[in-house]
Image (cartoon, rainbow, N blue to C red; front, top):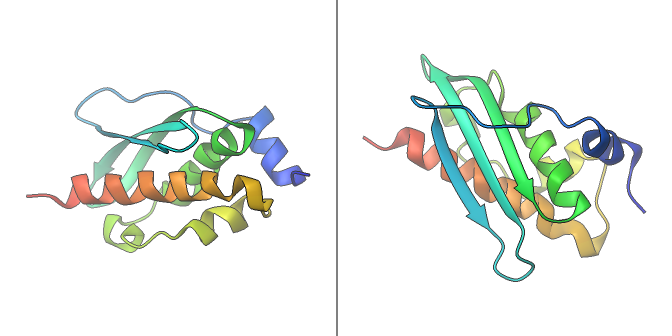
Length: 120
């Protein structure tokens, strides 16, 4: 059902946890399934230098949070302004139809983070 890549992210989550201020933290929720993702990022010179995630939800959402950190770390904030769910899905080695909401949750977290980091 799930790819080996997704299962590896679940078993060995990358950058799980929280960063204290001055890191920026965002929280997004999927109101339909109840999954929640919190992402914290430390930015230096408009580049994401450190990032952490916490997720409460299904297997796919937890793995998507881990994969999201791989997509964010070392990237320029403006380059992530349109991080689409399909990029998260590819990073997980694909998702079954019933789990595609996890890629949307991670994408929403990335976009909320970019919005907060880009605010004056």
